[in-house]
Length: 347
Image (cartoon, rainbow, N blue to C red):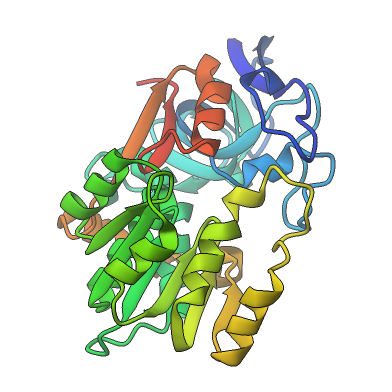
């Protein structure tokens, strides 16, 4: 079988912005037949995510992230359908997902990396398994629940940076559903601000490209900030932390503003921000969803229920064709996506 695949063509370097040319499309042939425990899958959707920038380097900077190898197939979140199987858990027609899905139109994989999913959980929107009802949604839901300390009726204000992205757009809604009286998003365009307020129910939104973030926070958060879901780091996060209340909580989810820089993760904070955290007794804890996978099944069922009932709205940006994986990834890294960035590979 002739298939198309995307390989890592070159590394951008630790201090450079990635380019679509860092990826290369190739054709390859899959050998006929399957070994014991192997499954042939056809790819439906692939995910591109900010953490992948770290995997483009020779050293990802995190022990749980293996670097991609030059001239080898790239991998990440994917969902597809089983074409044939020699694994007892899967049969033809099953819809399956994996966190290490090869960027290929078809692939032969070990059944152990796959998880069977029920399309009814997402009302047939299979791409949601890579976003709101997948690892992204788990990160948002469990991050808010484990580190946010939201108390219903406590009149808390939540601020989310990267709020119009895959994780932030879900985290803000979870905060609202769990009882935050005010939810404010920070994002990079007027269209995104409008989507947060009009489509997702945020109380307000700040366009950091056009507005002064400090002034915007004062206007939108008159009672200060109690919980901060941090997806971006850098100057934006310094501005948020400066206006946080005593005993507040920072959920350290991502630092996308720092991923093109050669700095440790999490990146170091300014002296002023460190002092604000100490003086106000604000917790700032790194959240790694992989440490909470024992809760994943129940959380995914809850997310699916929230989506199908309409309580949780899903935003997606879909690119078509495996040849556009690099374009989609680089666009997402520059904020070109509204919600989850997905690439549709086949019907």
